[in-house]
Length: 299
Image 1 (cartoon, helix red, strand yellow):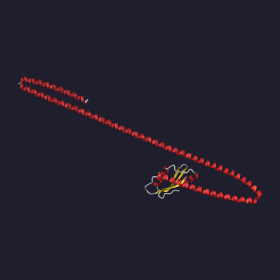
Image 2 (cartoon, rainbow, N blue to C red; image 1 turned 180 degrees about the vertical axis):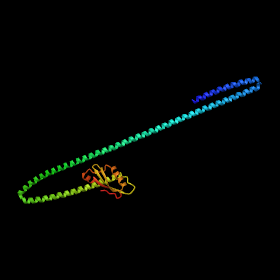
Image 3 (cartoon, rainbow, N blue to C red; image 1 turned 45 degrees about the horizontal axis):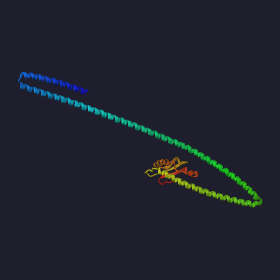
Image 4 (cartoon, rainbow, N blue to C red; image 1 turned 90 degrees about the horizontal axis):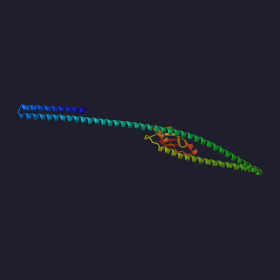
């Protein structure tokens, strides 16, 4: 709109210049008629030159004004482009922020689901463990009843045979056979007692050897997952285990906080701990004592 006004003003100025030029020309003709020719011709020439210079000056001024208008429009366009670019950048920032928020929400939901799944699995494992313990108890009770019934049957069979043999021996030399039989029974009982004691000792030693081995394995696995504090110290734990090596609970008996906290994290991180499937060995492992730090020892 401003550019159109400048053009109109320029046209009006041109028309005025033309009228002024015509007026000067007529005025010059009158002077020529009234005065000498050479002097009036020079005056006309000077007036026309002044008009051209003035016209040229107005034209240059109009051109400068148009150039300024064009430069102003160029600046306005640049400002508009910069503003649009800045607006796009702000929109991109908002979009990225929304995406980051969306990703964070998605990650939070994944973590919540992972935690819920872990809790559900722990509950399921605990139910399975209890069910297995009950089943093991039932199997042990059934096996014990079966062994007792078999022992009773064999005992009755043996008693029947012994009664028959004694009856036959009684007919020959009841006193001698009975004395010899008593001595033989005592000898057999002593031999069986000795064998049973030797077997129990060997079995107990084997159990202790297995316990030592698994305690060493448990300690090694926990230490591999332990980030030892730089500060010197120690912590003594009591670890209660269930079949399969899962940690039922960890009790801190004594020690400093750094070693106790880092040690407790290492114990749970090392799950499942290596344990034996042998009931006798596991009975010794289900509650162990462990020391982490200086003067490390475990039993």
